[in-house]
Image (cartoon, rainbow, N blue to C red; front, side, top):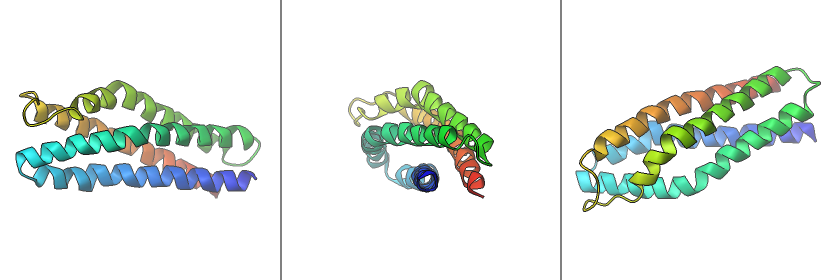
Length: 148
């Protein structure tokens, strides 16, 4: 049963990393290349879509990692799993304190109501998102390493 938990956790976290990596390095660049109103509307729509899904994915990944850490405490690699869970905690805290407030504003913006500094706010979100991606990539790497 523990082996199934390890695989499921690794796949769930790996898929989350893939989505967030894609947002950081592909989707945002596509949106930024669109004409101003289209790009801003795309960012707002993406913020609504992913803002509804990602909290469950982040918390679910953290819960699965924590269960793996507890259930596999006696096994080789437990320290790696605990560290990965710690990094996932960091990613959730970063999200709540740094990224979600900006996203909550962004997802309500339209060309008619967006603030004058909307691009600066999106750039700040993207900067923090790069850091968060690095954190979850590190967590994923540790989980994969713990499987060995």
